[in-house]
Image (cartoon, rainbow, N blue to C red; front, side):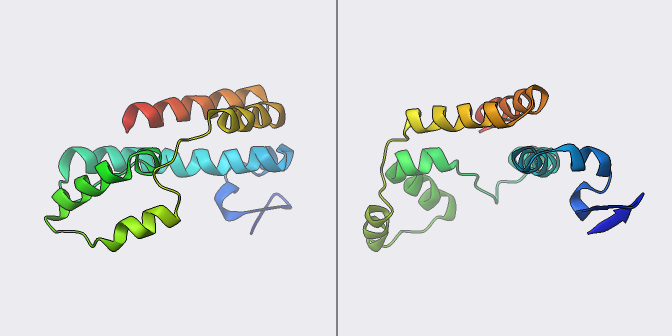
Length: 133
């Protein structure tokens, strides 16, 4: 915690302590996500362009098409995989369909809990994520 202008604020929000204090818990969570993504997207872009030693796997793709992603990993690592991987995938309920209704329910929850500006910013980050990966 950092104390600035007599306001106790988490270190990751110290640049805007008054703004942080005005946010509800869900907005604070979104604020943290924005800050993390703000720094990680440029790094991931550089890695994706320049570095062929890092494989980026999208969670949604992995759980929906694990066999395809396992082959990508195998080719990337230039190694075979253990047959036990399929037992582990089955335990993890893979492959599976992502529940679009649940996703929409979560979006509705966020829309209700976030102010309009933060909600639109979150949608923008989601769009960027989907375009990037």
